[in-house]
Image 1 (tube, one colour):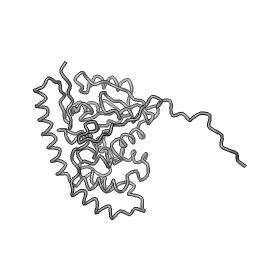
Image 2 (tube, helix red, strand yellow):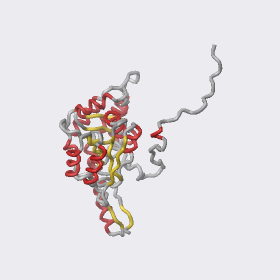
Image 3 (cartoon, rainbow, N blue to C red):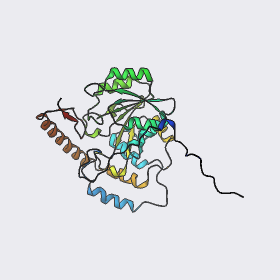
Image 4 (tube, one colour):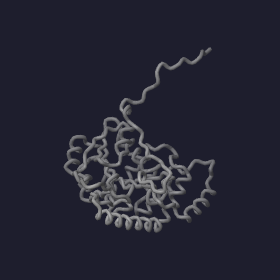
Length: 309
């Protein structure tokens, strides 16, 4: 016979290393332009919405989705001219970063970041028990290779995060600098290209099976798919296999797989929108030149500036 359940004397405590950690959230407000989240101001093409409605009618809702998201991976691979085995897709590029930290981070391992940069590059490693080594960018906010050497020598990171164009500066990581970082570190080099479509250069040219380099991208920005939460990685086949081993079963639902695959068939529309944003960026940069502000060179869909001191 069992009696009443005794009251718990104290609440279970979360991990000590998370005690000071705050969740990462962007304010959501009902306005036309949301600069803090940098969503696309344009909805997806109407033809995409019609095609999606047609395909949703064919989904077998009683069945689990394709565990490996092969149709979506093939579409991403075709877009970038790589093999499907080099593609890993997830619920936003943040989940891609989490999978990288699960596979290559964890207790006793280190991730290197160079601030100011995307906050989740340090937040996600911390959640997974990965120590974070923080380096500083130069006075002009560009990547300081001397600082990279210092951090790498002191911490031997298993994951090194770069962001190109960088968030929040919008600055492009220079190809020579990225190549030097790749040659310098022994672990994985992650180049976050969430804003890569607005940039004149991509680290995708460095990706092959001989180098531990990966590029992460998202459909939230130029593809107008923020509501779907879909991102991906292009990397070596052996690395993608490692990520598959730490991924939860059926992590990408059927709707997301169909929506992403269909979106990638509207590449011309996406490229036209990117071109329009780049033109507007040039206009804004030229206008800022006439004001008493200091601005940083942008390869993204935003421009960082401040009043001159």
